[in-house]
Image 1 (cartoon, rainbow, N blue to C red):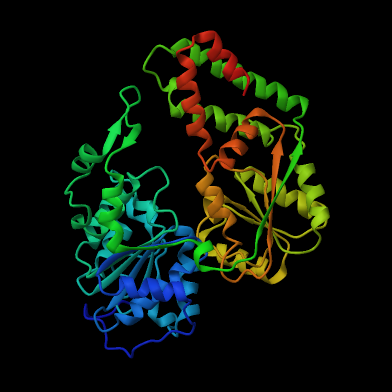
Image 2 (spheres, rainbow, N blue to C red; image 1 turned 120 degrees about the vertical axis):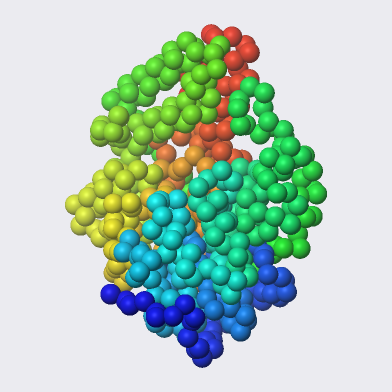
Length: 482
């Protein structure tokens, strides 16, 4: 076990250097961010945000004693690897938080501390530990800063509070806005309340957000959008892949299968059950008429389309379609994105039964073994079968130039995140994306929403709200047409 430092004062160390060159857009970002203590690097996925943050830390070495790097738990090992890749810092300078980290075991002599941001809302162990190394000579990086976009969330409040004393604060994300301009408030508040000029979210909301009178919490309009953008402009650097990189092209292919009789029966019953409940409570302020109910319906219908009814497998043709697609691809490395853990298990078993190589990568893989799985796939090839919830952020999967979406998620932004694990710096080949669809209404709705770069749940909710005014018969017909 690593022993703690005997003093709160970090030891004097030799300056460390970098081992990779920056691209032009990264140098531009550094030039803009360096003069200010706080800032946001809004660079699209795959454009090298980590290398940019490392450079800012290097140039500030004389002014800081350490860097605390918050990131999604699934990216901790990836961030540590990026630091080693771009610098000459060895393991003795890097500490990655894990389930064993406590106040009395935390070494105080490291330069880099990598922390899972989700742990900031789980008890006090990680919180009290990290508080020991955040002071005015600390640089804090929040990677995938949309994880602190919710101003009400415990982790947002905790991270904002404990990092307020840090001399330098930096946020990194390729998608600063996923639900609307409201997402910017908490991210800017973390950097400094002076950027937007509001001490509380309620002051911000009263000046810029118009809420629905029918659905509590639903924002229907934003006021002063241009003013907000001008306020944050001096503190952010933004660039897209198309603007700064000459990446290989993307190619999208759709493949379809029919529902089995068992799926069709389950699908129809799910719609009828929902329609009955919705019509019963349509005139009441019930969760059955809001986004929660629609999410449940969509989730149930898509689970059936993927071969699961109430958590149990039912006869389906999607796995057979996947086998056919894989037989056309050949032995090259492939990434397969699945929505459900049970799908990951089914896919891995099917591929192995057919003589192929497959590696499962979902929430059932212990944190300490996840990098082992990724390294094995990169070394030996085959299919990496992952859930978007675990692997859809931050990973570099450029070993593969073929990606199969066994099932697409509801949100366009999450699907693009997953796509860009392979389409990023370091990818020398065009990337082919093959989406598998069941021939049914729910999958048609998801595909249509993605074609318009939208959220399938939000689009359906808006349609239902409009149809309600036409009467219960039309509403029932609409639900049954899904």
